[in-house]
Amino acid sequence: MKAWSDFKPDIRVITPLICHLFGIRLPEQSSDYIPGEVLALENECTLCIERCLIYAPDAVGSFLFGYCPAVFKEIKAAAPIELPLRAAFPPVTPVCFATMFTGTSPEEHGLSVYHKPVLKCDTLFDALIRAGKRVAIVAVKNSSIDLIFRERELDYFSEESDSQVIERALYLIERNHHDFILAYNQEFDDSLHATTPVSEQSIQAVKNHTASFLRLARAANQHWKLCNRAILFAPDHGAHSDPLTGKGTHGQDIPEDMDIWHYLSLEKGIDY
Image 1: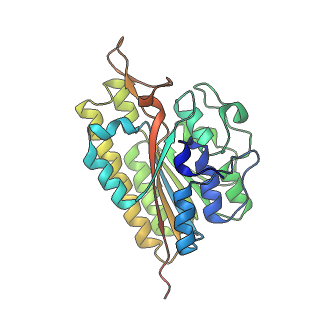
Image 2: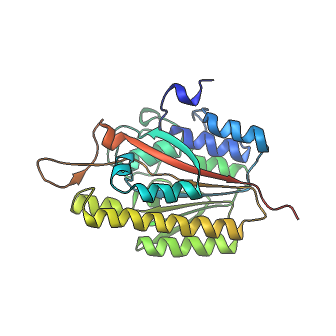
Image 3: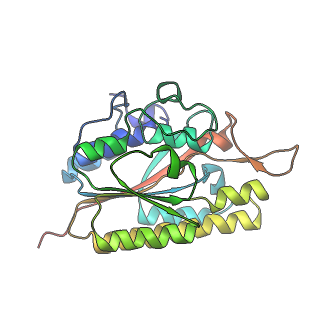
């Protein structure tokens, strides 16, 4: 197995990572690559998780480090394991999330352009369901995550806004009925397309996403404190300014669009 430092893997690693942490079988055709930092930490604490929260903010790429470094310090404080990754190509939302949650390449899962069909291939969600896990997807209505993983035996919550997504996810965490919750927000992506990725409005959107992630992480650590748990900050791709339009966009094989960081927290449940 290659060391994590040997190369920067792409977001296919998220599916095998979550399956490995839960101790369940991979989806068909999924990559089996596990980040070395996670393996090293597990060797110390022999952790097998019972709950998982993934917060997926759209387009929050590593190019933002230079514009709002304090934001990433806050994220890292809540989820200290840093995973430098590359987006799928082309770096557009449905392609990237299909790749992230199948563990396969666009060529394998069949979604290689901006399109939102229901994926028929095996996914992380199918693997979780087969293992008896209770799964919830909370997303803005008609977003990629809301649409492409449909037709599965899980709980779908389609909300009108980012704020409603967060309130729903907080309710589900407090209820403590689901083993796995995925929450998607899109304010930053909306803002960068309307302005630029580093406009005042866009930077505020990144701060809003950070605040939302921290609220969810605190809630998960409170209401899931008896459970071994994973909390993951998992954007899909980055963005850049189009010199022709003057507005933000993404979809090119350039660092601004392709380079992202995920942040992971692994916590042991309290043993009374």
